[in-house]
Image 1 (cartoon, rainbow over the protein chains, first blue to last red):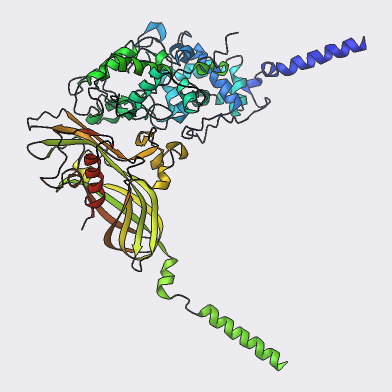
Image 2 (cartoon, rainbow over the protein chains, first blue to last red; image 1 turned 60 degrees about the vertical axis):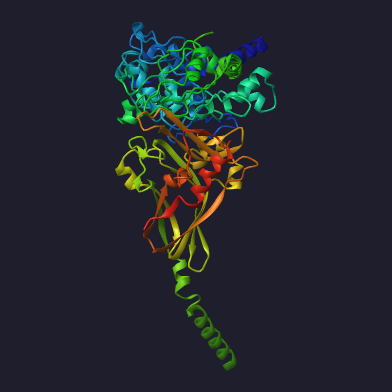
Length: 365
Length: 265
């Protein structure tokens, strides 16, 4: 009898420890101070080839912060009608982009640009968004909530919902040490999202493994690689590596890549909208090509459905404008060259990233 | 007792003499004082200010040219003292005229400041055009964001080399106002093509304690690509080079190193 009691008590103790987080409750008048504050820093497994991650001095990456950010990323609580979340347009299976030209916000409102694929964001030391309107992940996270074509909400409502939520206040206490629900605000939400997004590290595609000597490119893929990086005097240059270079496969800078004649009227002027500099008209942030095979459609407006169309555009040499990058020029690629280039681009898919459980929806079983 | 006192007094006198002596003269005192030095690079195209995109320039044989990007690395930047000793200013900087898009910006130029420079008289500045061998063995991942060598777009992964200089723009080949000929010249160092070179420019500069001494420099892009009417990059023949064509890249890098950079008076 005593043995059975002891066993039962042990089981109950173990279960209570495992469920400790969910047993914490908000105290009177939103008091959270009785809940332990866990500031357990995470050391990310950063690839050696990458430039060091841009650190945020006032937002270090913690276990609790990442967990909170992951929940917020997938939670439609941020949207006005509770139907859309960040993950609605940034879908893990598609390299954290989606599959349509203009992503859909609440009430299926079409956005103004294609959802950028998210990978290695913590290494982006230039601006964010296609038009570079903000300089940090924390600032970026503030924008979509109040964009009427995206989450269509207002931050005061979001703050109210989260402060009144059954479990979020506890998570905010554990992530940021807030002592009362009234301290939970949009800036902490943005910080949590940014912490989570900094864990989006993608560095294990076939090309990465080939560079590390752990895989071998096929002859077609290798030929495509030579064209991509202009490493063979016997092959035409794809001129790709002027903009898509290095471990991130982007210079992170802004170019006019010849999509339109920007000397004429444009519906989307890109970087000029932010800089007010006419020489920035039609310039957009160079996206990474990691997982590119999965992130169609392509360009800031999703105008190209396939990689074949993208390559054809570049092969033609683009539309001349005064500020078009001179690296956009007719390439002279034949059908074999184009096929091999696509074979190489297909080696940039990182399956481990697309299936990584730590980045997946925590609300699903 | 008297001997002891005499010995103590002698030691005291010697100590006072030693510590009160002038150990190095005025020059040594100056070594303990520091000022700042600012290098200011102004871009030119001949006698005209070098302005990206906004300005067009007469070129050779009826051609006109317009630029979008002109940049180059300088390494081992040192001042030469009057006594021949050299004082390091910095290891590497990127001189990048890409954002010089107005004449006002061109007049202002690109400035690089260096602190804790020993006060005194200097007679010249030395710098290497390009990236030194040691630094060229590094890669962008070796540097923190913001360092001149952390810029991935300035590095050739396949060649394991930085791009020493980039020149990009457009040419109008026949003066009809159509600038559709695209120009891209990226010069780096391949294994069998050593291109790094040190230059020295005479200039009398006085660095005063806690003050900034400005060393004004001019970089004449016309001198790089068109030093004379019989020796110029003919865009009708060549509009692109990635250190493939010796005649092209040696013209560019030699001129940049030997004649394009001068002290402004």
